[in-house]
Amino acid sequence: KKSKKGLYIASFIFLLVFAFAVSAFFRSAEIKVTPRGQVVILNESFSAKKDAAPGGLGFQVVSITKDIEKTVQASETATSQKVERKAQGRIVIYNNYNSEDQKLVATTRFETPEGLIYRLVSAATVPGKTTKDGKIVPGSVEALVEADKVGPAYNIGLKDFTIPGFKGDPKFKDVYARSKTEMTGGFSGMQKSVSKEVLAKAEAEMEETLKASLSKDLVNQIPADFVLYNSSLTYKFESATQHASGDTTIILKKKGTTNAIIFDKGALTRSIQAKVLPDIGSDMVKITNLSELNFAYNATSTSISNAVTSVAFTLKGEPDFVWVFDENKLKADLLGLSKKNARTVISTYPSIKEAWVLTRPFWNQTIPSDADKVTLVNTLTK
Figure 1 (cartoon, rainbow, N blue to C red):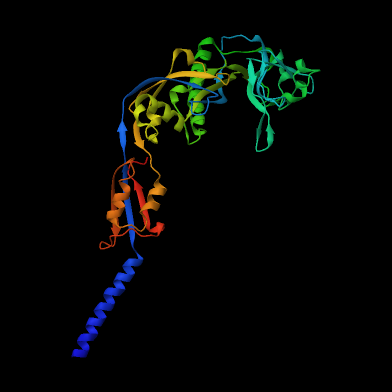
Figure 2: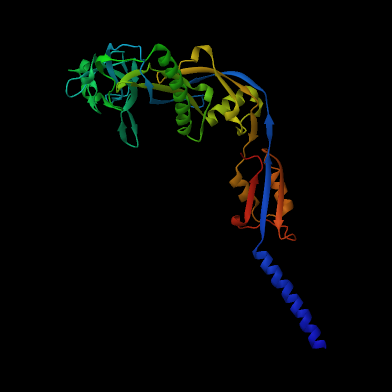
């Protein structure tokens, strides 16, 4: 009986030791941290520059051009009329001459290898060349050009272009252009047209369709660390062109362009913080609802294009500031500490409002030394 009793005690102790060893192997910890936060009222004016100095508020211009078609019935009462139309298309102009901007006036000529001439519809500024990773990168800008003469002869595919005005100058070789789209729309002859009422209605519908499509495509190309405000989008539409399609239908083609400005989230946050929370000094903060603020251009900054170098705007709303701390450093500082000592270390982080330390199993009061067994949760992360 004594022998069995000792065996039972030994077995019980063994089971306790085994259970403790197994539970120790599965030790883990979860650290929940709530950073400091503050919501403020914002109604301020800002200015930004395209080439802002380090630490300043800069912006980038983003742009998309699309065209759509719509088939409509030709007016039964309308008679055929003489139509003369110049072909149009978009080109990309390159500056591999030097690092300075090259300004080109409206009507600047661009020539194909076959001698066809197209002219800039609007003035353009081509950025100078730059060096990236040891390689020279030509500056470039997209522009709309129009055929020098009417007619279908100027409806051509993708081509290279030179600038005749630079002949005899070193720029002739290094400032050039390439097609981005085909040249289309050139026509000369008799054509039946739609009525003014049908055309006006179709144009309005096409503009709404273009707006929705342009906006969607533009939003999808914005990098994650930049913010785009929908109210910063500006639109420009070209008049619809008519193209006969059989005896009773006409195809309307309309082109639209949207331009907008985007801001680096960090730079914009710092600019907002400087106006509404100037006393926090060098504390790192972020605004969790930055994209939800209300953006509006000032009266002098409503026309946006690649040529714009500065903008003025207002932001309104209730930005939600959250203090930022180094989560990796905090986790490393807490490895292997008792819960009591962990709380002491956490208290040295001024950006943290409160924290909870949960260890498993329940009798374990120490955070594991293995980082893979420790989970840190920021309760205000969005």
